[in-house]
Image (tube, rainbow, N blue to C red; front, top):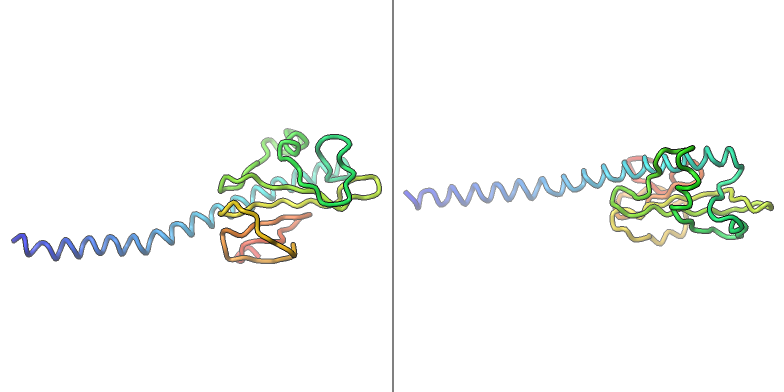
Length: 163
């Protein structure tokens, strides 16, 4: 009797492992896709608030006074951005992407008065490491580890299905 049950047990265990082997990668892909979409929504929230503030101030500049006159792109602290936007433009500024990594924000293209005319919001993706993006107009990506980049009203690095 025991010998007759052994093949049935082995087949049952193998079926469970096969089901897990098929389901777990699909589940992880769905989780990462959900995180990507949430991150993109948070990036749009930041951008909408920053653009509303720029409509009032005429610039994307924010941060400590006297540091706005820089000829090159300047990475800014999220705490400075939160102080500039909360609570007038956004109730609570999202500070991290859905993977728990802080967003990166920078401003550039300063006019003669020292006001930034361009902003870039960046999520480092699932790996939490910056990509070596040489050309910001890099388009779509299929890798969850790739950075997501939003600048001046549109995504310039985005998931392939979102393009």
